[in-house]
Image (tube, rainbow, N blue to C red; front, side, top):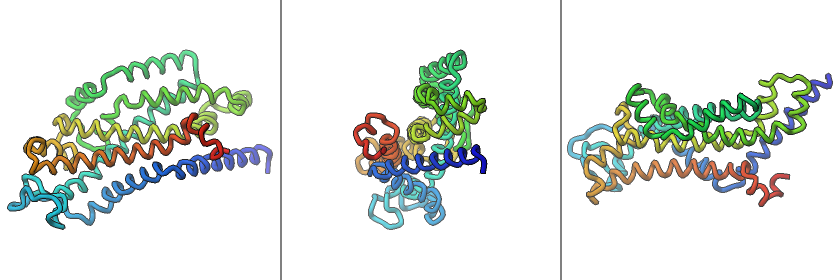
Length: 305
């Protein structure tokens, strides 16, 4: 085996060891495990739950059934006789698809822009930083509303990308700051001197060091998608293509649930579901923060030896 092969093997082994240690530290935080548990519940609802739980249908004679009165309608029914629990379950796949689409888009663009700007420096950095600053200054909600009115997206994945149209900027800024430090490390400098292609340096020396921060950006971008999408569906900006948590809030609001205590449950359960999903993502991000945040690492140095 050549020296180059041995070196590559050693570097690969070191990379896996660091990644395993990274997630071991995160796993020891109860918030990380709680976040994974909550996220797992929604994934199960969106994949298994929709197959075993009947779709919500308009049923005459069962409108305004109060919650916890029937196993068939555990969360009660709407003014149209639709089971609220069934609506929440069958709206979950759409929301998950939006979250995945928006989180991947925002994190992907932010990673590409931030890493490239931080590593290349010079004019490339100036141009990309200017674009990032402009994206951060743009008012997100009005911009999304205008674009939604023009294109009227139908697919949930595209809706997720749309509501994350400028959500990548904050992550790009954070990653750029990290890369400015990492690019001065000796092993990165050695790779440059040896003539290693820039793409390979970024893929093997830079990005792996940023993985925890990238994951935090991914989680927080997904959380932003939830609120933006729900708000737009609630306001009626996005088309009512399917059962959706935002649509449920809109229908409950239109029926007077906010001012009528007897039917307040029709708006309370969708709100609680949205808050629970968001809280789970926050717990996940805070658990990963133990790995990313320098101050937190300094407070628990024995876990990073």
